[in-house]
Image (cartoon, rainbow, N blue to C red; front, side, top):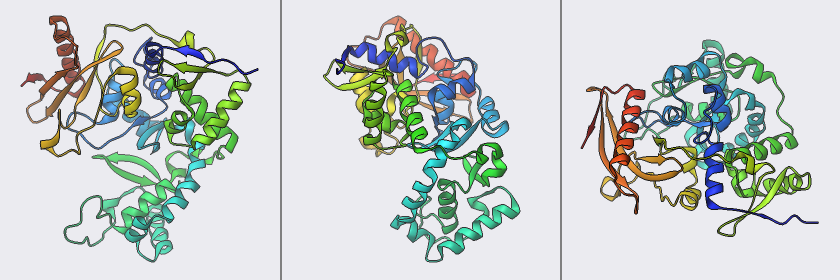
Length: 386
């Protein structure tokens, strides 16, 4: 007999997501536990305030330092870098699930016309040359491979053949990112970077599907099969739908219906996972996991967020690198900061509260404290409000 969907309110769905993403409830027991709870943390090159992963982790963990992250990533190798929906730092325990992705990525890139144009006709010869140099010389960056660049070629579209080869070999699992220097990847053989994880077999298709869907549901609280599939970008919606059907039969998930009539799934114990909001105010990275799905952010928080760094300045509504303001369980506004490292000053160029959110004395004070907390984390000596 089919189970009738349980109703889930918007408030419950929001609190489940925030608790799963370590923004409500008890704080994680440490940095490694936090990254494990999130499943991955996105990396991004923009540094107008601080790197994305430091902002994401620092907003959740008191006393967080970039040095602690570097120790996990480049020191004792508890994290590895690879691709989810974007470049991310991932718990090393998940490496066998990326081994499933490597052959898929290899075939996809080999068919890509843009990549073929970058590497030229002697593909195998180029890949062998790049691999042999790293095998013989050790970790190398793209800059360590000389190539005469065409005049006017941009940093992205002007990728030289060796850079295209390095990225292919990384996506295909034949190279690993050993470190980052000024945010540039340093590549090495995976058997030298994390030998034990490299020696493990790839997950089976069943193991991979179970991991991808079960852990995604744990991190979303309420999700459709499409949302489960998209969390790691690891499988298709049809596979996720089959997992949901199997898990439902096994009594591991519950069918739920959201306030807006969406048919979704939740963990069997979803009511026990609900957490009460606090009065904490924190500034979120624009790449924060709760903002990645703009439709979900609008649905759960009534917050219409657009990342405007790639929008022409004259067409921006707010600013280049705007940080949403999370107050308890509500997204109440956004703030446009810039870190002037030469002066040690975090400048707040603009502050906007959402419609209906009052600029009370207490709220302004809590936002100011959040800005001061951010300044302390990134090493700014002072905060200046425009």
